[in-house]
Image (cartoon, rainbow, N blue to C red; front, side, top):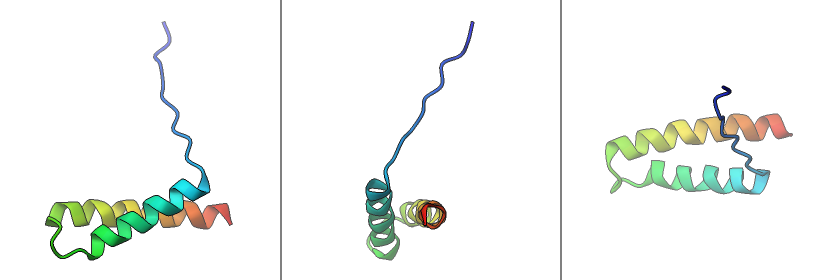
Amino acid sequence: MLKSKALLVVDVRQLAMIYETSRDIMEDEKAHHSERQTAARLNEECADLLEQKR
């Protein structure tokens, strides 16, 4: 039996929105440290993907 796999498709506009939101969280000093770390990793990954789309 084959295992099911999920495929996530995100268009460039959505990716840019995630990038912007994660940047805002990274810069928010009121956000918990772990949230800022997660946002930083997400922001970096989005930046890499956006660069590949160019």
